[in-house]
Length: 95
Image (cartoon, rainbow, N blue to C red; front, side, top):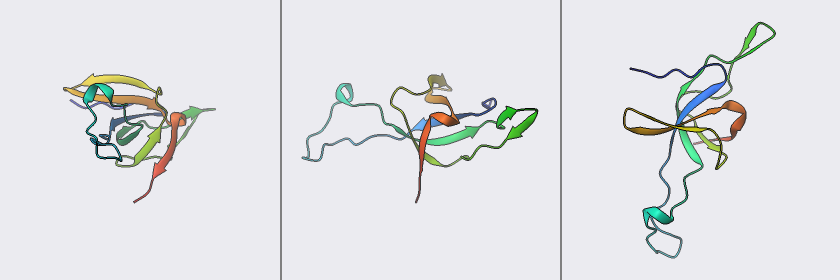
């Protein structure tokens, strides 16, 4: 079974954060902040405006930065994913 977001929404998986601090201290899971970086795994067809579809500027496979409290967390197939609108994405991370 697959998930396809509607309209201008994207589905992404958070990229794991650092296990150690800059000083080499191991950070326990309870003290870690949720990463604000993710990899897009599905995109919707685009925003419908005045009867026309406006294509999204992001695509599957892009690594992006998004707000700490953006989107809706969903659990699908045992994975924690984030569903959010394209406008909640701040930047695409280049290679």
